[in-house]
Length: 213
Image (cartoon, rainbow, N blue to C red; front, side):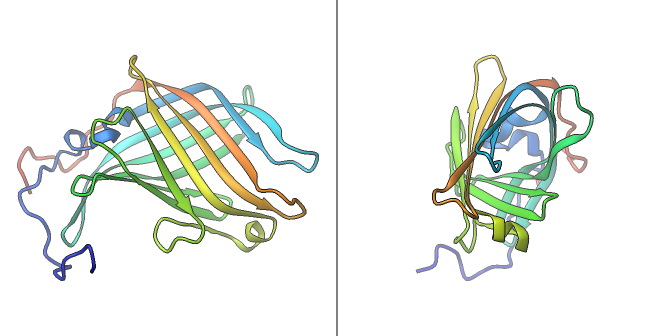
């Protein structure tokens, strides 16, 4: 039996348009953040290599989004990562963090300019102090897609991100991107982690009227 209604068109009514008031566990992430002590463990021909990095993450509220009866609140994000003391961008990433109150589901979508996209998800309590999202290559919903070269040389089969919130208002993440690298017999765990501190508050979503939809 499907978990969804046969009515796939009727949109919800009377919901609050203020995204910042309805982000569930994502509320602590809204704003602009910097992290100065990032660590990347990446694959190289001679073995894993550690790379320090700094980053800036902007997470801004979007207006509520509906898919028929489905309702999301979310944050649009941009990540810029640099090696210390180098202006050239080391990593760039865009996407959305989404919260579906009806199912207590958090979704992260991501796209990077290497020709790769992914969507990870998990069921999360609204007041969670930490949570983990997962994407799997074989999934038809929360999955991973890569360009032909990456499929040939660095096939990504799993992505996980664990987010933790701290008492001082900061938050941190740990990412594990599992790849099958051509010429290697064992999966490689590409690891990233950083601790983020807020440098600016979020900008309210533009269509907030103070009235329910």
